Image (cartoon, rainbow, N blue to C red):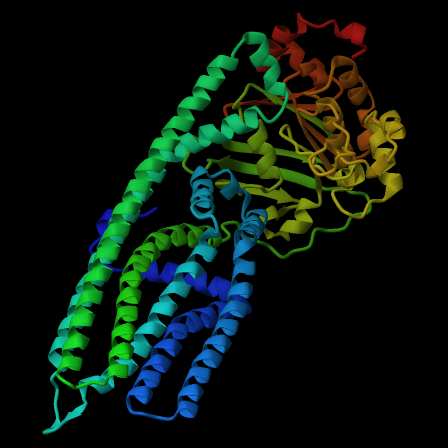
Length: 622
């Protein structure tokens, strides 16, 4: 985010105006009627005081001139009717404006979430992009767009007040005296306008300084907010409470929470003092301008240049203008701050597609025979100094059972991400049936893979929707998939069957399933998809040994003639695989069956011997 100090002498830079324009276009694209109601509200708010100002001036002049009661009554009725109509318009527009403003942050969140669901996956693992999202979303209660419209409405009100006051005051400057046209008020009026301009500038500078200090204060509070959220999440459930109670850490946690709250309170008091200081300056500048207005208009009335009614009109109008212009200076400072946040929002929403999106459809093969080849593939994560995959050349066909093993950080998960095209290679090429995978339609290519990641997600949806990954569930397929992973009996015991919600986040009738059961659901989801490739990243990490044995013993039946790729740290789970790839430092350093690799000198044998001493696999039947 740009620092404000470098720009404090400028009202708004061209880039900042561009970011605000991006916001405005985004709003108009989605909410034209909302924007129209905001404009109407600003116009009515700006015009409303002038009905009374103009009407009262005309009423006083009429009474002073001796006009009849009927005409004076007409003036009074006109004032009341005009005020009523203007109030009704304002309130109707305000109602529409506030209704939208109440959930504008939700709409903004919806747009940003939609962006995150469609952007390239690599953005999601980019810390800088996620910080951009956090800054853009968390700085305002109403969201960036709601805050923008809030202040834009105030600017419109000030603009209407300025236009109306100018229209009222111009005739005074050019009134005819006894000797013809005179310009006695031009000089004082111009002087007054210059003073108002100075006051506006002072308010703007004060506002910018205030906002800069507030922003600096917020930046120092980020860590405190993170701690506050952490404690709120920590104490919202029962899991962490077990450790706290058994280890007697309640007092320590209370002390930490108290320190965070005290520091936040200090920061809030500091912000309140800054606000009161800014408010005092704004009130002082407004008061000075009002005093000068009364002196100028009073002088003109004393010299007989304007009528009694005009005194009321011009004094009230100029006071109104003074207040509006001073507030305009304050609001302009807010716009400058908001432009920075709008910049974060614009940059996040404007993130382009880095990956090339091909258009070639994936060949529909009845025999599901696909050939995958990595040809001299290398890959480095954005911002990383070293490559995670180095000059990798391998190939495999549908129907093979392959295991991928290696130490942490050896490139196993990166290999899967490249295969699924969550990332594109840095060098080399990955081919499907001899064609660069980047040339295929991304959605069609993704349908080839059913993946169970180590950090899989099971959502608080009905069980059937979790398995089908859709609101439309083929009951027979879902029941079969659950039975094949050992959840058939569990399903039969559920009163609502596939309609049972997983967890109680959204439905009190939901069931809190165990971690092992959720992992089996993730495997069942992969089976339900019925894709040619089944990829398992530590698929049994949350299962007990018996459940793990059950899953692996029936895995051939589960995947049928599909290609199955496993990532596993438990080498015993690789024994039934036909082909094992041993990764080390981004390369495949060994390849073969379990029996072949166990007899060779190398990394696999060392890993196997380190683990085998803890298990009796013959007893387990593996």
